[in-house]
Length: 204
Image (cartoon, rainbow, N blue to C red; front, top):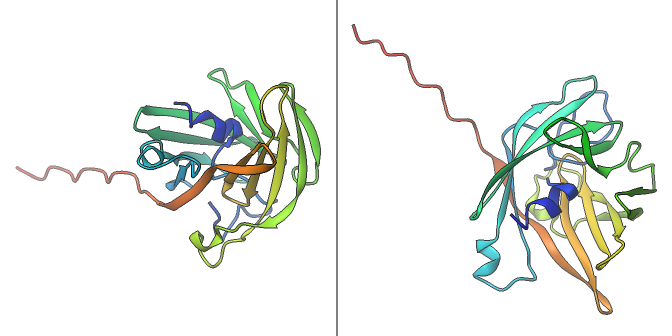
C-alpha cells in the first residue's frame, strides 16, 4: 500500500473536532473513534487519483486523561487494508510496531513548541502556522489554523506537511524544480459507526 505509510509515518493521518480531551494540549492527529478521513493525491490524473484514494478510520482510541494514549488507525484502499498503532504523548505522535516499540516519531514531544528534531536520518523543522485553504471541508467549529512541518531526507525531495488540531495531516507538498507540488490532501471527512449488535433471538 504505497499511499498508506507516507501519511502516518507520516502520518499519518487526520479531523478537527469541536471538543478535545479535557486538560490536554491540542492533539495533532485523528483520535475520536469512528472518525473517517479520505485522502487523494491531486497531482495524479483521473481516474488514477480516485483509484488510489486512501481511507483512514479511527477504529480504537484510549484518549482518556493519562499516558500513554493509544489510537488504532485502519488504512484502506483498493489494494488492501492495514492497521497502525500510534501513541500520543506530550504533544508527540509515535508509530508503534507489533511489539509496541517506537518505529518512527511522526511528531516530537513538545510539538509544536519543539521546532526542530531528527528521526531516522530525516531532519524536521517547524516552518510556521497557516490557515488551511481547504478549511471549507471542516465543521464551522473546527480550528482551520495548523502548523507546517518541513522534512529534509538524506535523499529525495523536501516535503512539507500541514497538521491541524484533532486531525493531523491535511495536506502534504513535495519540492519539485522551483516550486512545491501538493501530493496528498484531505478530500472528505465524516464518522462511520461500528456495526450494530444483532438483536437477541426471542423465538420460543
